Length: 476
Image (tube, rainbow, N blue to C red; front, top):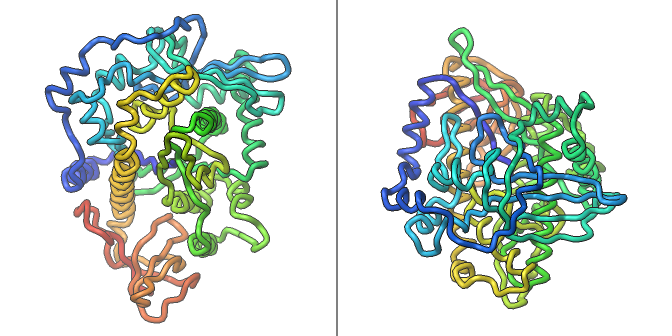
């Protein structure tokens, strides 16, 4: 799911984020027994030797928790993807203290100043991470594609792999743009663009959510956006492709855990139309939501703000488990426009470890491990609760950043638009400023949806981390 990534360098804000972690009861240090288990050697398993495949990773430069490594090659008129996913189950014994701690944490949580990992760094940034020039256990996918990028075959097996290079998005983009990329890297563009075209064909939507950055300049704060590169999108398509292959394997096997999302209700799309109006984005009624999204440029601040708001349509996503051939009525993810499963980020997301085990069993024609089935009933609830905590962290962080942007501008007047009204209290609404891209509460008589108005900042307090409505406006 798209996440608002915010970077911050200001020390007072770092203090506020630390206080936020305390107020939201975010897990801190790992218990000693968990750290002790993380030091244990690799659990024995039937891993074939695939260290001859020249895999590479693509991640932000500072990342060390590397879940995926890939290699792309031509195969006749089509292509072959080899995609290695960190084999976390090779290190986490079912029923252990480490296993219990991952079920408590569920997800890696991201703050602007740090991250709170799902697994001890000794594993997530060390023994289980697909770091370059290190032999690592992995769930190795082999996915064959035809000339149009459609999947023709997919399988996964346990393997020992060795990544050859740790690449980052900017360097990958430079090499591809300059025409100096070697074939496996150049094929990332080729396959990525083919998959993007197929996404359009099936009606899927990939949100190119930009990164927010708050910068202190001359004693004031500025809120900026950094748009992702095409290479980010191509890399995401590889992950989507694998998640779709995993879902198909599970459905064929009759047992699985899918990431599902029903179609967005009309009211949610209507709210986005009001936000588009607030940001001067032309959205004719004959243009679909998907077509509009593809027309936007994340490098444009108003478009970036709108894309951030589009993530609200993903809030109905959940996890659906099934077994013994009892396939659920909803098997698709509306944004993917196909069955889909989370399986490519096991170092950072609990459910992926279970999805990998189901797919490995499906390909091997073996029963799904009992420890996987034993966790089935609780997994959707655990993931839902973990997702709510991650969303609360994200929302609180954004609130703090927006309050910091306006903290020295109380009393100033800005142009905005009413994008939401409280159905029980019509004098209370939500305003989206044109610039900076800040959202806040407004109190006033006679407010109407979509109304453009001048608003005054009456409160902007980043000093109370978990309290709501840190930014408030009034009609000017």
